[in-house]
Amino acid sequence: MSEIISKAITCPKCNQKSTVDLMCSMNTESDPGVREKIFNGSLFRWKCKKCGFSTRLQFPVLYSDLKRQFMVYYIPNVERSCIVDEKLEKEFAELSDIRKRVVPTINALKEKIFLLEGGHSDLAVELSKLAVAEVVSKSTGQNVYEGYCTEINKEENSISFQFFLGGDHRSYLQTTRYDVYKRSLGIVRQYFNETDKKKGFLNINRSWAREALKRYKTTE
Image (cartoon, rainbow, N blue to C red; front, side, top):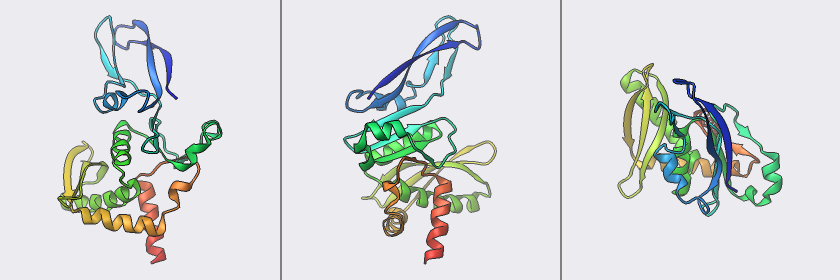
């Protein structure tokens, strides 16, 4: 299911024209090294052979880990809550049994891969992240721009998030108890267990968490 496309690029510094091969679709079985390329950034890095100018390219990437039964679709700056690829759904009927996510940033792509390959519920993580973000915002007096889960340690009863605060997006690391995630997981299992059975790639993010929390409070 790997797909590589060639794209013409003009260097913004020296105007040299070149062609680059972009890996837009990949799976962990046939492309075992692709995970590392995503996490070290090399998959998106481009360097002009003439002048040495370097930049990060943005292009859609479909990452598949069918052994662990999940797919993550990175579409730069996507805002939709759900993306349905009718061709993909029709061609691969078995995809209805796996978790499918769509994300707008490379950091979100990394987070989803980390969570889903570890068997964690990204729905519960988003609920936990929302709660912790509110605490961080109150304690720092700054708005939380975005945040990502960086570590989950059940044995040490901890879950860690990296938040970006204020207008300058200052990095802020916050660790809280794993119990927060467990409580969120209980809510997900009781009220949102059908979410993964929906058709298409779901955008499970802060907006989803806010809406889910609102629905939970009106049900209680």
